[in-house]
Amino acid sequence: MKLHKFLPAPSELEEFLLMCEDFYSGGATLYPIPRSQMEATFWKAANGSPYAIGYFIETEGKIAGYGLVYPFYSNEAGRLCVMLEEIYVKPEYRCRHLGTAYLEQIAEQVSTDIGEPVGGLKLEICPTNEPARKLYESMGFQVLGYGSMVKKLSSEECC
Image 1 (tube, rainbow, N blue to C red):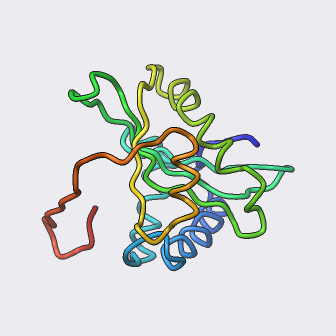
Image 2: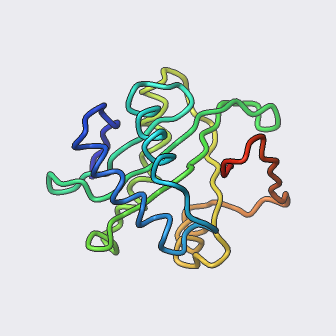
């Protein structure tokens, strides 16, 4: 398994959109998002934003999935952390340990790409996504005692 950052290419956009649409319609999230929002996210990541980094997960020379990460500094953790915003593996590549490999490599990859060591990983999980929860727990992720809250600052879906 190897990772490569999103490149600003229409072919990569289409590959991302197909997977992202499946991610948002497959029970891993609470609600769908518009395709225009997916496109904006892709271009933000592909054009080098420090706030959104996208990686394609490759195996056997083919794109098998993607991950979106957002670096942030946490005063509470006392270090740079990475929000693992989305992790998706295509159905035909599941059960090949690609998600595990991604989680094992992502902190080092982001550290290399941004030039600063990552000291923690954070993610959210939909309560109905039991397979993902089991994977994350097996890799040492723990449930925080915090709940999430969100305030929309526009009429568009958010956070």
